[in-house]
Image (cartoon, rainbow, N blue to C red):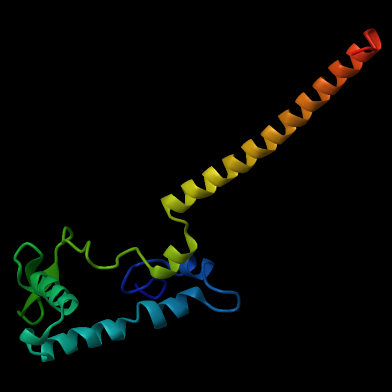
Length: 159
């Protein structure tokens, strides 16, 4: 059932709706603009019709990866359709699809801070806290020195 998840990356509708802009379904926007399955299909058809010698680097990479999925014996197993007797290929569970955008979407990356961003934010907060503490301690030192000076004045006014 793909009605509640993206066909390309597999992310649930709920997750994508949470990061969508107000008044816009994040899921609908995602499957129409980011991971439109028809654009992926069009790209595959385009690659199959284009001469291999004219491929760009990215086109070459995607074509070779999808060709591996179709041809490599470890990625598919042959099943026989009981009704028709025809051979069908079925993807095995342990297929290498790390190159494909599974469980990932650009819209999520925009909303989630990276580890570096989290570290910078934490360091910034610590810096601000340290500055406030330093200002408070300087004010206390000034008050102690002022009190000490006043005490010495009352004991020995000639100072």
